[in-house]
Image (cartoon, rainbow over all chains, first blue to last red; front, side, top):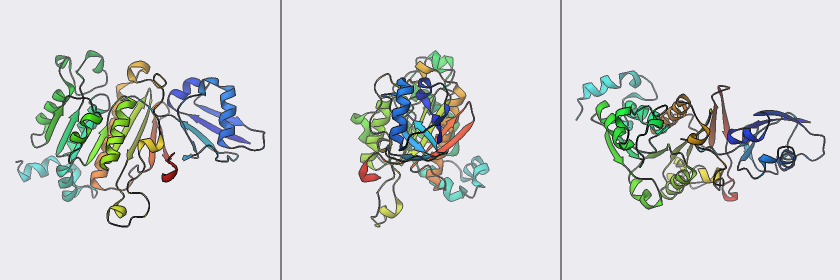
Length: 80
Length: 259
């Protein structure tokens, strides 16, 4: 199973690229599982403020992911 | 009072839009907008709201013009360094069009002055650069039932939305659903920790990016006043200036009573 990850704003400093393709071989695959996996691989993401959107709809962390989903990690921006 | 002929001539190029027309133009003239922040977002937002003919503009910012503003804050020039931004901006509006009522408030928007500032305001445009200011605007507008256009930037990216829009059906007595659309705190219940998210001074920005996002905010404000389709109600527009990519996200509240 693979999902495409999009990182916005300050989160791009915590990951190698603002777009990543993420493979998953485990059984249950909800947003919360994805985030746990990301925190292990990219520790700088842990503790950051953001919402998650799947296929351009904001979701809660118990949302179940499907092969091919686009998952965005959206922090608030500050500048003006 | 502006001669009707001058009024029609000045706005002729937008009157021909079916979304505007004479009634739309009069609605703009009757509108009162509060713009909080006269910096990178505030300058383009003010320029396009005043050229479009919004009748009353209240500008709130306690800052003064400085040299490092000039790369992106397009209303200011070196001769104005040290002057209050709201006064320089107000003078600019007056020289454009004496018919526009412009009020310069050289204060920081906060819970202390919010109630007073929001009197008879139809819409607020958030052109601030701190989370403190944005949550203050959000909470005051939520209390007062006033919608506001959100805008923020980070390097080459921007976010735009319109929050707390009154639900017309609810206002007319059909009290199903929510009285107002989602607001900023529904989306981001708590601000990030200090230092977690950088502002323009810390991370850098090109003026053109601020110009794009401030202009999008002005357009969204005008669309609200003209009651056009396509408002970003319960939606977040994101713009990536490096990829030239715009994506719209359907928002959902973190507040269980609103989801």
